[in-house]
Amino acid sequence: MQRGIRAALAAGLAWQVALLIPSMAAYAYYAPLGALIAVHPTVADSAAAAWRTVLAILLGFALAVGVYEVASGLPGALVIALIVALAIGLEQWRVLREHASWVSFAAVLMLTVGASDPTAYAVRYAGLTLLGAAIGVLVTTLLFPPMQLTVAQRRVSTARGLLAEQLDRMAAALRRGELPEPGDWELAGHALGVALDQMRAAEAVVERARRANPRARRWQGTAASIREQSRALDRVAVLVDDLTTLVVQFQPHRRGLDRVDDGTGRVLADALAGLAAVVRIPYHASDSEPDERDGAIGSAVSALDRLTTLLRSSGIADDEGFFALGAVTVGMHRSMQTLEAHVRFPAR
Image (cartoon, rainbow, N blue to C red; front, side):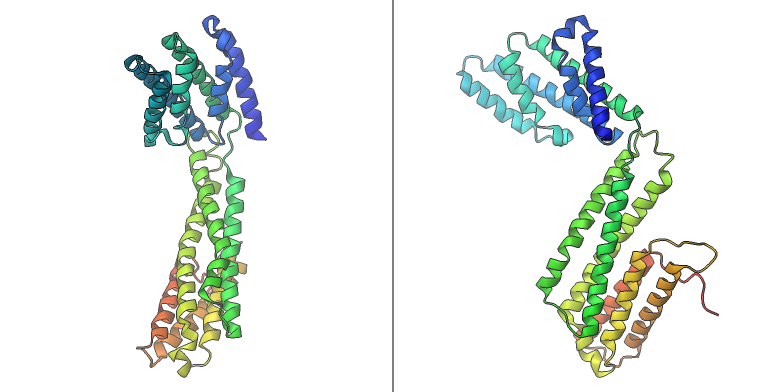
């Protein structure tokens, strides 16, 4: 809704401003086009779209004029084919990014519409497009440019929930003494992978939204929190993916360690469930008293300590399952560190 309001206002303003230029009034409709091109969710994206689009248009015009002058003796179809081929080549320039398609569009437009007076056409088209784009950037900057925080927070929350669910599912399977095939875990992890991709994209949008945004200082704390949560969850997800693969492939709770302690699977399940609880609660509710997060951390640390003790006291050090369980334990320790989960109020 906000973007629609900004785009409508920018297009209307661009039209009115273009009408005030006598030599351009007949072509005023190019200005609203530039405004629409430049209205994006963030100020940085609006500015980037403005200059990259105008640059692509100018490149297309220059290419069309140059090729037309050099190859004017060739058949028209061959000239157009040559211009389009060269324009597609120019569109590979990384600077243009997603606005590269304007090169071929502008080249064909120049050849079909502005060939009679290319200089005047280029000035009118590119000039009015740039004028409209500038108005679009100005409107985006002044008219409450969004920080894109709500979407990012929702993406982080979704990824957090799915990551905790994966840990809980694995813990429940270990308690039942059952584990699905590796392919089943890959299928279950697909939703988490999609959620993580969406979370990373949303975090990147927030980072772009902070640039040249007059509201950035006011929401600096929230934006920084989103960045920290997103990157922490990203790192933990990588660690969880590794330990999931180790548990599913090597099934350490069913290997040599069971000859020492039949409860290996239960201890491992408790540690995974404890980590899931910590993942679900990102922040402390109080700085002075124990809260729900403290309770989750205490349970997770206790379960992880039992798993570590089991490894240290085991007399089996040459079994493949032993090494896999050791790697899983290290991964969970690293996950707790990434989540900054430490005991704040030790029991007396």
